[in-house]
Image (cartoon, rainbow, N blue to C red; front, side, top):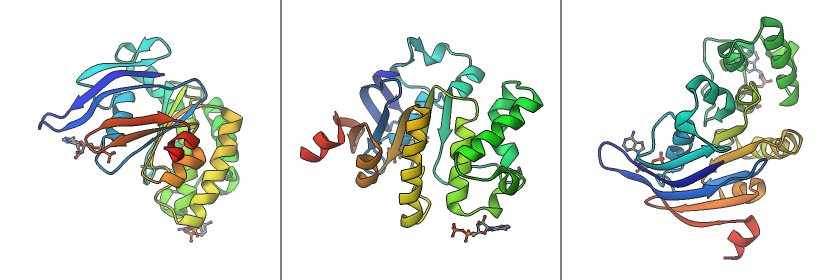
Length: 227
Ligand code: ADP
Ligand code: ADP
C-alpha cells in the first residue's frame, strides 16, 4: 500500500495532513505516532475512504482506492477503532459477522468463520458468541473488534489506538497476543497510537508526525529511538 503526496484540508480550512507519502510493504506493521490533532485518524479515514483526500493518491496494490468499489474496499480493509465501536444491540457473533454478511457469504460459511476468529483472538465461541458488548470486559471488547476487522480476510488492517481503552496490564497482554497473531496472519497494518512504547514494541517501521501533519521521520524503531 502507498500514500503519495496525500493532503487533507477540511471544509473549515483545517490543514489536517500535508503532503504525506508513505509506502507500506505487504505484511508490514507501520505505526503512525504523533501528538493529538496531528492528523493520524484523518490518514486512516482517508485510506478507508470514509473521507476523501484533498490531494494526492492512495494505492492498494497498484489500484487507486478511489477506483475500488466501496463494498469491495470494506472487505479489503479492516478497521479497528478506539473503544472498538461494536454495535451495542448486536451479539458478538453478529458483530463479527458484519462484513462477511455484507459481502454475501453463506450462513454456514459465516458461522464457521466467526467461530474460527473468536478462537484466534482467544475468546471461546461457546461462551462469548451470544453475548452483547456490554457483557464483556474492555479487553474482551477489544478482541472482538480485532476479530471483526479480520473477518473478511482483509488485505490491510487499520487500527486507531486499538489498545488505549484498556488498563496497562491488559494492554501489555493484548499487545503481546496481537504480535503473536500478526506473526501468524501477516497482515499489512497501519496502527495509530500516541504511545511511544507501543510504537516501538509493535512497529516494523514508525512514521512520526508533528503538529500540523508533517512527516518528521519514517524509519525502524531502533532508528527512531536513536535519532
Ligand atoms: P489525530 O488522530 O492525530 O488526533 P485527527 O486526524 O483526528 O488527529 O485531526 C487532525 C486535525 O484535523 C485536528 O486539528 C482536528 O481538529 C481536525 N479535524 C478532524 N476532523 C475534522 C473535521 N471533520 N472537520 C474539521 N477539522 C477536523
Ligand atoms: P476485566 O477485569 O477483564 O476488565 P470485567 O471485570 O469487566 O473484566 O469482567 C470480568 C468477567 O465478567 C469477564 O469475563 C466478563 O466477560 C464477565 N462479565 C462482565 N460483565 C458481564 C455481564 N453483564 N454478563 C456476563 N458476564 C459479564
